[in-house]
Amino acid sequence: DNDSVAPADEHQILPLTGNFNFRWASPNQRVYIVDAPITYLCSPGANGTITRYRGYDIVDPQPTIPASFAGLGTTFALLTTPVSACSFTYTAGTNQRAGLVTLSITLTDNATNESVRLLYQVHVDNTP
Image 1 (cartoon, rainbow, N blue to C red):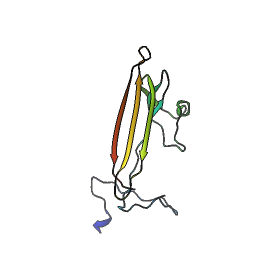
Image 2: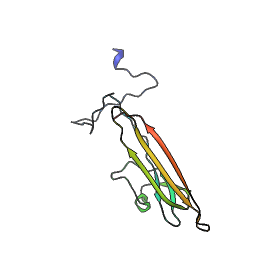
Image 3: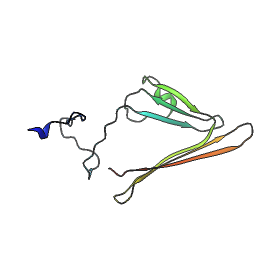
Image 4: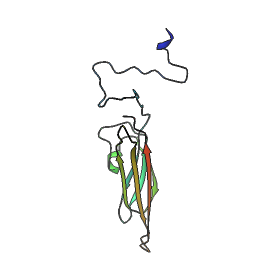
């Protein structure tokens, strides 16, 4: 029957064999597939940086320091410097409201000690 055939623009993915369960139930029956991980790593300080890492496999635990990307086939790019402070936070949503990602980055000119704080917030659809 045609109900089991995926449309031409969709891919049908079968679950792993065995007794696999997702950690949380999905009320809307949605699944998101990750293609390749990308990490934006902030290392604040007098000469702090934000660096983008890509080209590595999904690993557990997620790398959180520059040295942990060595040997993973990673490429990297320096995005900005000097970063004196940074914060990336996620506030989970509920059934009544969306989640919120907050990105806060402070850049400080070491010569003049002048700073600028960049703040950006993004609403994330609540699709657990």
